Length: 291
Image 1 (cartoon, helix red, strand yellow):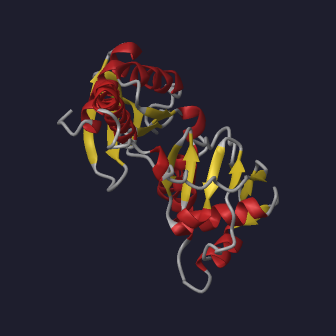
Image 2 (cartoon, one colour):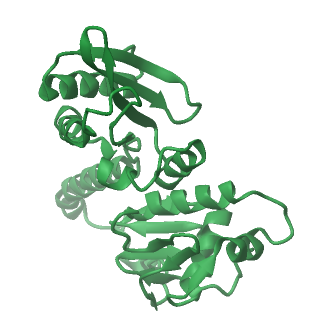
């Protein structure tokens, strides 16, 4: 689906959509999105709240190109991240289980963007023929104006550089293993890890077990979780029983390639200590160090 040249800018909530530029402007900051992701947005927004099946979106956006559903999942994940949307509490894109997706906010037109200001007429320029006394009074003011202009330009230039995207981590619910049926699911521990992650690294974006429990742990569902939230890491764990008693197996998985970057068995530790250990390890992995 190509973006039509006649497609005008419009708003969806607080977000300005610029289809021809493949941009979403949120909080005054433009974010470029891939053309196919923009195509998905335009198709969904054009349905005015009706559900679009995955097959319908693939046919409309990718047309005659044969692709799998994973490309659509990825495009939706990119849109959610650019829009600041939340799968559990969607403000823009709602996932319809077994059906597809639905756009949940109306789009509204916007006025055409104002053209850049015209150059000031030549008559407003400083006159080189001004008397010397007048020029002497005027020159310091010109220097001050140029200094202010330079400072303003520097601030604008700095503002154009966006900080690197926040690291996104999902914490899965901890379930007892088959040989530890007496142990209850450790959702309390998972929630403790979520809280400690936020305390250790406030800029980190964490998807907690309340949301991740919607994904039942099968590999294909975990792949969808990674795509939906554009995750960097997944924290997983389970209760086990050994000869020495109850243990907790914890692992940090890099979402990009599925590699285990940190694996530990922890014995007889309070939930707070386990959460601290995992949070520090996750922050270390996100920083590129060895946890």
